[in-house]
Image 1 (spheres, rainbow, N blue to C red):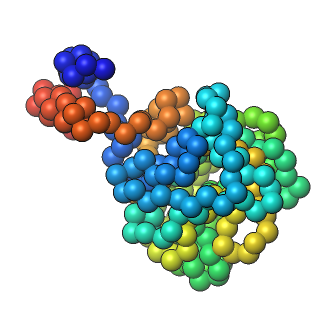
Image 2 (cartoon, rainbow, N blue to C red):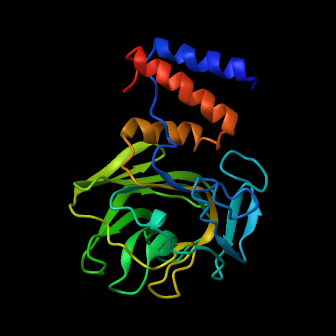
Length: 256
């Protein structure tokens, strides 16, 4: 996109309310486009252990990780960016098979070092999980209503704002529950396809576009995320153009 065109498009949005910037608060973004590199500004790259590459949720080849159910995983070493006090977690999954609980994206270690995570249980329901004290007893498991089917892509988004947990499936709010306190700061790595509590319950299927934020996304942001995905990192030039255009929009009172 030419610079002048980009600015013109951005300025045109000042005529209507502007959607929130999904880059705001983004702490980790693993597009899984044939590698485990972090495309956020933090550069917290993952280490791939046996994960291969398959078609993503949008049909693009080599744009999702495939976990074969044998314990293949992607692990991201612990970092301050992975230890928010409030958060949002988003990813796509396509389950190949299961015969019990299976782990998806987790920062869950031994009892006493439990932070947050996600899993599917033996009935086919997805769970968003948060502990504020690091213990299994203090872990809140928020279950979705949807029973997922194998061979189908689903979008998962869990948010926590310090007063409530919310779980969205395919852009729709399915369930919520009150919860207070800061998320426990765990020293456990972030894991895709398994977790650190014990070596079982490994995942068999595809995962795409894993992203974490240090804030709770709104319902409209989750809907936008489901429809459009995580924005691709902008070039330096385009980022400056966006900053200029957004400043102009703010002066006109179109966004805060």
